[in-house]
Image 1 (cartoon, rainbow, N blue to C red):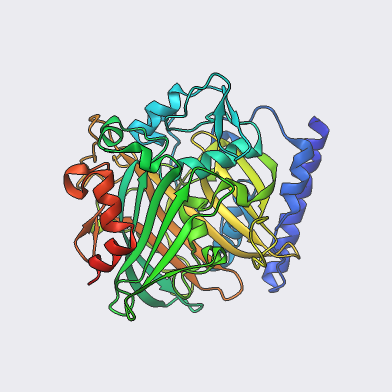
Image 2 (cartoon, rainbow, N blue to C red):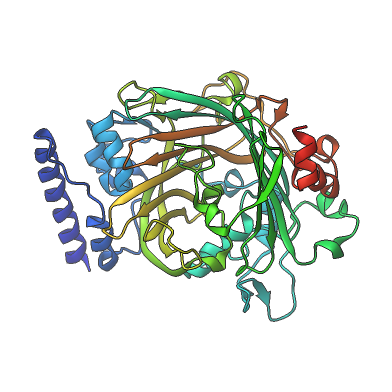
Length: 475
């Protein structure tokens, strides 16, 4: 085994040297699947505990990753990120990983996850079942998931990890020359109906029988610019994980709601954003419409799951880096972890999806997707999505301390949320990037489990996730 590992390391170094030499002549070939396939047969049971040890002192957890040192962490990033740093002057800030599990979850979700054991399994509808008739009551059903199916089901069921949520969002579209083509504001909204973690949300549902077949409701709508204002999509999700959600769109110009085909889940929300409903929270589909799940790699990696909330900047904005104008990507923080889980899946429930497979990089500590790569039939990357997360609390030893008060839940503990998305079309070189904001156009403010502001689950669904509610919202 040791010989295999050494052979892998030597092969990778040789590959990088050749790649950098080719790069100087403009002849670089992407790392693509080179090392991820080799490492399958050379996986170690234990890894260095920090990046300084992993790189033999070349990189510290306070360093900035750039084109000058990306080769030292080439094994810790995906092929897309590697190329962005090496050729597009993208920079990445490093920070130390915090061991406290509570920093990786919303408080209510964390409590529910801790109660779950390995007593759950999958039934014929690809849903969570228990031989003792113990019902899943939220959190990760498989916190120690071993199989690809269990891990993907964690993503499909837990989604945004709050029971009721409004996410205010600011975003920009970047053209191939690095210019900001358009800015936009939008809102993500969701209401969990099965696997509710917060008792106050669960108790507020008056008649649970009318939702007995449903998993949740979700919606997306744009509030800026004027030509996009009112464009909306609503989803009614079923417990049956083999069944597509009911999907409707609202056209603000015709004021009509239209039921969309399942295939529209793979379409861009707006032109050049490179983000679809299927990409929501890294896995925006029922579990059963994907198949051929396979774990292809497990080991160290750099992830953005901590220290990415920026209350020190207006509206939680982020600095930018890279590209021809120095603004194509967010300047984000990444941490070294020892347990990335990489899973390949194929879109078995879609007809003519336009890609061959999807590769998802998942932080094994809290089961969140941190990177998604779409591949064509020739194993070339055609689209990538990168996601960052953070506890809504500042670590003063790492982050700026201006406006550093945490956002607390009713448990008096800091909340947690996603922070940003970077969505890139690798053929057109256009990028859509957006971040969680304190507020956005239309008076929407980011909040979770806030019945006092947005009403009970019944009211919330009626106002923001039904055809009648959406029409009234944009009348």
